[in-house]
Length: 114
Image 1 (cartoon, helix red, strand yellow):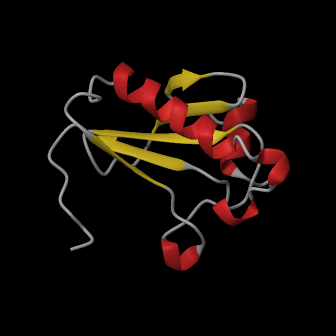
Image 2 (cartoon, rainbow, N blue to C red):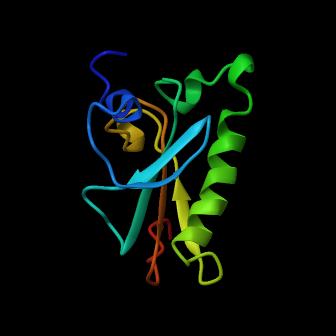
Image 3 (cartoon, rainbow, N blue to C red):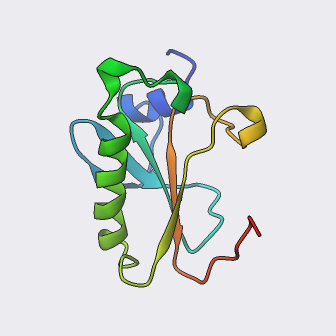
């Protein structure tokens, strides 16, 4: 998508601080971190939301999860613990409509659910 900020990052049109990259996924530091470690992981293919993952893209979430494991090790938070979040649609907190996963850590995270 020509106006998608994450697609522009994948194409190199917008710079980012890359943390990890493979053929399917790009991970980069969030520019407005909500924790000492806050990395955004995106599929290189544009998929608007989690609800838009179809059967041809069935490995997309697995690829994001595998990349999150590697990023947690790269950022040295794997053993201490971290949180992953995928927001879906506006009421779910999604701001950029390109499927992405947040990986947060580096401090004790507060429980926002209970």
